Each structure stands twice: as C-alpha cells, then as structure tokens.
Amino acid sequence: MAADPKPGCVAVFGGSGFLGRAIVESLVAEGITVRVAVRSPGNAKIPEPPGPAGKIEAIYADVRDETSVACAINGCDAVINAVGLYVERGTETFEAVHERGALNVAHQCAAQDIRRLIHISGIGADLNSESSYVRARARGELLVRDVFSRATIFCPSVLFGPDDKFLNTLIKIIRRSPVFPLFGTGGTKLQAVYVGDVAQATLRALRKPASRGKTYELGGPRAYTYRELIELILSRINKRRRLLLPLPFFAWDFLAAMASVLPAPPLTRDQVTLMKSDNVVAENSLTFKDLGVKATALEKILPEYSF
Image 1 (cartoon, rainbow, N blue to C red):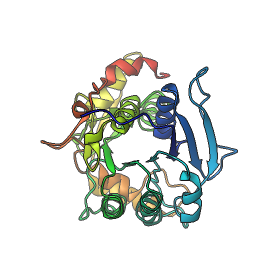
Image 2: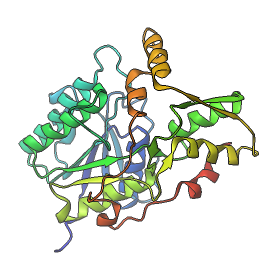
Image 3: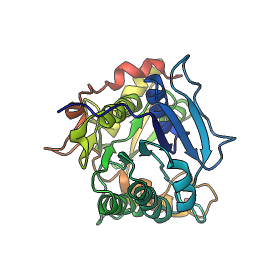
C-alpha cells in the first residue's frame, strides 16, 4: 500500500509540553508546517525550526473550548492531541481535559474532514481503574473512537529524555537524601520509552495508511522494576551509595492523602495508584515494530542527563 502524502500543515495540541515539543521538532525537520495549539502562545516553549525546514506557528487553543479547537485546526491536514494533565487544579480536571477535551478535538476533526488524527493516551488506560486519571484516559479513547473512528491512538509508557520530569525528579531525590523510599518493594515494572521514539512513531503513522483506526502500545526495549531504575541511576551518580527503603503502599496512600490539601501536592493518590500496577506493553499489541521504529535503550540516553 502506498504511503499517504506528507501533510502540509499539522496542528499539535499540547505542542509546548515535553512530548509535544519532540513531536513538533520531528515534524518541522521533515519540512512540515506545524501549528502549535496552546493556551498561552506568547509564553509557550516553542522549539526553533532547524534552518530552512518547516515553519512553526503558535496559536491559541484550549481543548476544553471547542470553538478555539475549530479555529486552531482550520486548514490543517492532520491533528495530533498530545495534551496531558497529571494533577487536577480547579477547573482543570481529568474529565475536562482527557474526556471532553479529547472529544472536542476529535469532533472538530470529523466536522472539518481532517485527514489524520493521532490521539496520545497511555499504557494501562482502564475504565475500571482505581485511578481517576487512568479512567479518564480510557473514556477519552472511547470518545475519540466514537466520533473519529479512523483516529490512530498511541499509548506510551512513562516517557524519558534529558528534559523529562520523571527521571530528573528521581535524580534530585537521590542526590539530596541518603535514603530513597521505594513504592512497595520496588517490584513494579516500567517499560520506559524515549520521547524521541514516540515523536518518530508519530511521523511514521501520519504516512502509514494502515495505522488508521489502530492502537499502538509504545514501550522501550526493556522493562525495568522500579528498584532497577533507581539502581541504574545510582550507578551513574559517582557510584553513590543510598539506602533503598521499601515502603508499603498503605503508607504511600496515607502520605498522598495528607499531601492532597496542599496547593501543589508533591504526591497524589493517582500517582500512588499508578505505581501499584506494571506499566508495560501488553502481549499481541501493535508496537514500534509495526511502525518501523526501533526503540532506544535507556542506557544510551542516560549520559545526556545532568548528574
């Protein structure tokens, strides 16, 4: 089957975020004009286009406001929804962003006959999860499929890259404290995925007709236990020794409940719930391999971090 033509203009919702920026850079490097749809265009971290490659335009849009969504995608060939909300604040709720927001984007793609839509969700999205975040992700996928059945859905594991919040947060804690508390025994498995690989997969999917209407689970080449990840980081920080302290999940639940009263809680109930289950690619799923992308090992990228 022949490849789809390269899109001339792609709207990326959440294009100033960690994953969004990587996607924008990947598209622009291919000579594609990118419309970065964000709530604060003037303050957004927009990557500079490399030389005579594609163009980048920042435009106002809020996925919770369908009118702004309609304006943002007008005239585009493809749309990518990479908006992510991990902590609820006021009217910024999981339901508003991951459900109604996802629906607004998909509905306008259908209304304007947009050729391709890639919706970014996450591994483990489950309608029956204890986590309101995970449930909202799952409902968002269903809503997108309901109004735009040919959408491509990506479900990546936890993302890593030199500017990530995940590993960099762990690095800061390890550097400052002689004791590092583990979630449970540290046995939860994470198939961490390089952000650049997800961006490359996005580019491949836009040109691959067979990706329409499909869901891909995207993980790295190896699944690590949480303890193994911490030990790997320790091996890079001047071989510094730290006490890895197992902490039962009921203790984490209590700490999250206590932290929930803070304006910007350092730990949430949803984060604790996520760490109770493995975050790995399911058997028989479509993966990077089906898009012709080779997953990058964490060990290859770790030297780029600031230890």
